[in-house]
Image (tube, rainbow, N blue to C red):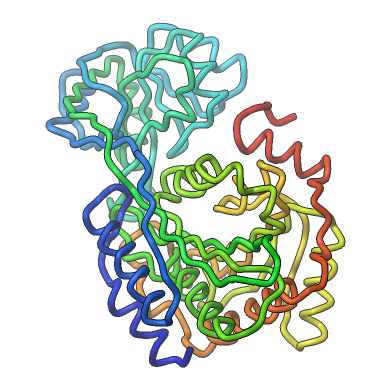
Length: 409
């Protein structure tokens, strides 16, 4: 796939396409159409996602309304209580949250911290976003995720810009009131599935997510990964492969890997025939370091490093858990890895309105795709998949922590 064809993909998807929206489905249909143009049949698989529309949201501090943005799916209601600034989430701090509205120094919260706050009797939660000396008040839409709430109750949650949060603490605000009215409902997201057959009845699954956050056009995160899948598909569609290739363009990754979780749940019976998952999440930037995070045996990380040296393509590979769609595969026992070019927010920001095509280099994207294609070709043409179907204990431990089954030590 040449630079002109790659560039067209980004031009055609140059709009916000967040989880569960008509624009996300439009993008799914576009990707399916691109597969069909390559002669590869594709279909959409729907799965449910929690959605909501905010009807009103207000936060008052000592009777004065302050700028705030409600979290989606945190419920509706009207609560009031003493403000409790909690810069740390240790046990001593959490113990002081009873009957208070907690102001956290973060833009999110993990499952165990949330459960601890609920058990302590917190009434509601305020989060901080942005920078004190940066007037930009952009913040991507956030939701109170079911994976965080678990079996606990929901409480009203809202986000405050850093400048507002600092003023509250500085002026020793005493009472806070949160009023939120929202309509919560079940929406739909989609995975796009396409296949290249092989001689064997076993598969290599290749994945990349196509949804963006609420402000972002998602060129880097992660239409670049989807362009990578299309590039691999184009390069290998006429090859005779031993292992088949299943391409999965995942929806709703930005909402907590919902698309890949839905895929492994609905295709669980087939996972025994899936020998490897290769996930692409953010490649092709003008600047940045190419990495691979391997949720499989350490030998695979070594193989990727050796292959990079052989081809003159610098790559940093290590074992661990990557926060993307490779994780649900690894959690089901499928050896998995993610490829990414990590550029950093100063040159390639994500989850904001600056994630646009101009942070990418079509030349670098082509080079990244060529390396990923060669790795995929070697795996797909192997007489026997060289990767052991065993997830190391240290990776299992990271999976348990990442998926909130165990607290971090």
